[in-house]
Image (cartoon, rainbow, N blue to C red):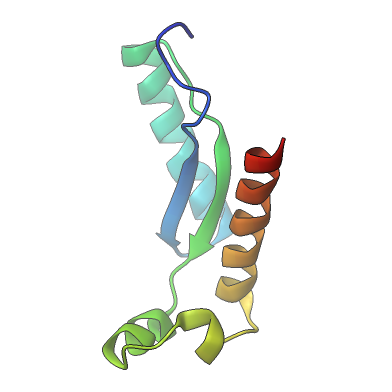
Length: 88
């Protein structure tokens, strides 16, 4: 839509599941479309993980401390999609 940058994308953070992320994005997209006449594309989602809080408290990097698991994969997926957008 005119006046909206191509650089705006949505990442649903701290979600319980992909299904919950879909519902959250759909609600946001509907509100944006209704009120702004613009639907920002979805870049991805990151599941909630208490290990993120633990990494912050330890002043460490989450992916260094927890390189495997669903949340780590979610972060990697979002990063890859973002990198693809930047290099496109």
